[in-house]
Image 1: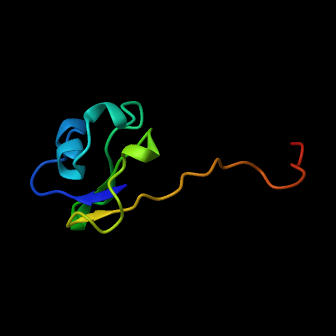
Image 2 (image 1 turned 90 degrees about the vertical axis):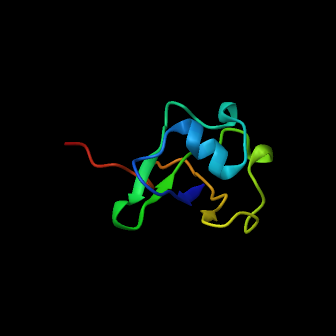
Length: 79
């Protein structure tokens, strides 16, 4: 999910409050990552999709977005 935050870089706790979810449903290993620091847009990973707020229900919040596994497509070249 993405969200806008004012002031200093948000913590996982403040991100959870902004999203309206329990901190325990956010991936602490992923943390809070800046997407567009100039516009104060950040992202977090929600580990339980059912706990994510529905899209468009919170101001300044986007998502949820999918997080597909990234893997090579087809054969890989050997070095």
